Image (cartoon, rainbow, N blue to C red; front, side, top):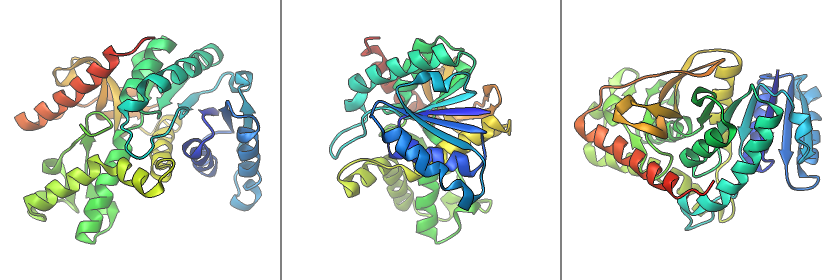
Length: 308
C-alpha cells in the first residue's frame, strides 16, 4: 500500500511521520517544489524507523511525480499557510492555482487513488481537486470536521476538567468562521453538554472553536497549526486504508442532502476503502439547519470566484 503526501511543510511532514508510525502503508512518498526539503525530511523520518520499529519506507522528492505512481491515497497539503490577520479566504486565489497543478499530476500518476485535501480554504480547495481530477466525488474529500471537532472536544475537556475520551461531539459546515458546532448533540460520558454548562460558557466554547486556527496563528506569528491537523488526517487515512468504516465529519460533496447541492461542506460520513461510502443526514433544528446552509452558501460564493 502506498500513500503520497504533497507538501513537505509542517503539516505534510508531521502527517508523514504519523502515517509511518501507525504503519498505514508500506511506502510513504513526500513531494514538494522546494529543492532538497522533501528528501531531507523523508530521510530523517525513515532514520527514526529502527527506533520506532516501523518498516514503512519514507521517500522524498522535488517535483518527481513518477515516484508517486499508483498511490492508493494522496494527501494534498501544498499551499501557502495563513499569517496573522489573514483569513482562509485570502488564500484562495493563490492556493487554487497550486492545488490545480498538484491535482493534475496526481490524477495522471494515480488515476485510481483517493484524495484527501487539507489546503485552505479547505472546502473550496476540495472542490478544485474534484473538478480538476475528474474523479468521482466519493474519492475526493476534505479534512475539516475531524480537526474542528477535536478542537471543540479539547475546549470542552478544558472547561470541565474531564477526559477528552469521554466527549462525543460533532462540528459541521465549512472549515472557517462559519463552521457549525452542535452543543445540542454533544455529550460527556453520555450526559448532555447542555446540562453541564451554562449557555454563556457554551457560546464561548463555540466561538473559540470557530477561531481555533486563528488563535494558534496568532501565537506562532509565522505559520499555522500542524500537530492537530496531521492527527486529523491520520485518523481519516487509517479509516480508509483499514476499511474501518469510521463515521467522521469530513468535507463531502453534497447532492441534495440537507437541502444542499453541488457544494463541499462538512457533514458526518462513513469512511472506508472506497472513500466516502455514506453521508448521514442528521435531524437538525431550524437554527442549526440555517447555520449549515449559510455556511454552505459562503463556500458556494467562494467557489463562484474560482478561475480554473
